[in-house]
Length: 108
Length: 116
Image 1 (cartoon, one colour):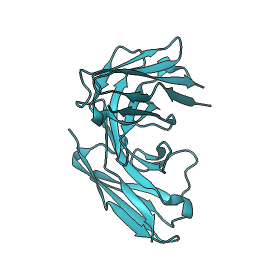
Image 2 (tube, helix red, strand yellow):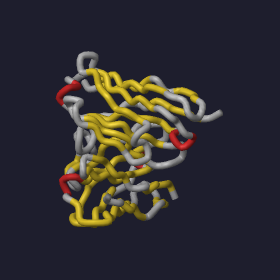
Image 3 (cartoon, one colour):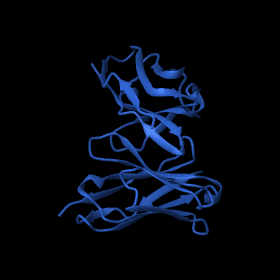
Image 4 (tube, helix red, strand yellow):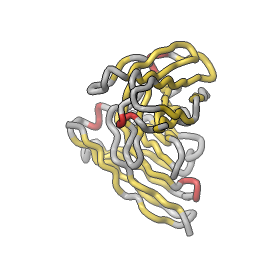
């Protein structure tokens, strides 16, 4: 079973700064099956990135995804106030979903 | 427009049962795999179960295998999760989510609390 480890657990940044979030898989995975979500308190997750690097419909271009093999990255180029939230990576494999434990991006 | 609306959550005693529903609109349910994902209070997302479009193939997380049953009624455009032998650790908000690999569409969630 694939384990996804996200780092850091919490990222304290100011609006306008760049955020770099990491998602490491316990073994090589297909980029096609790696997605990123944003979740705000009391809300359902929102799909940001699928296929490791494709932005979902309506997602601003300050969000970008990259990576392959075991190491994947979500980058927010310039943080807007509405970007402070928890971010999860997700993998589809063997017909089941696996989530990372999440990275909280908080206002410094 | 795609909409998913969960219902059926509530407070139940340990060992009890609940059936969650997810009413789908804006698309033909039978054409898509569906998932249940839960989130315990203050915790991360945990995948629970998935079902194929036809309903023939089902998948479960080890934590719920043998206790939960996923099903669907495509004629009613509704997804279900029958939860039996509930435990305190099943306390969570339960979301339904559309599609097999990743999901653009999630419901708003229905809370389940297992407590005496």
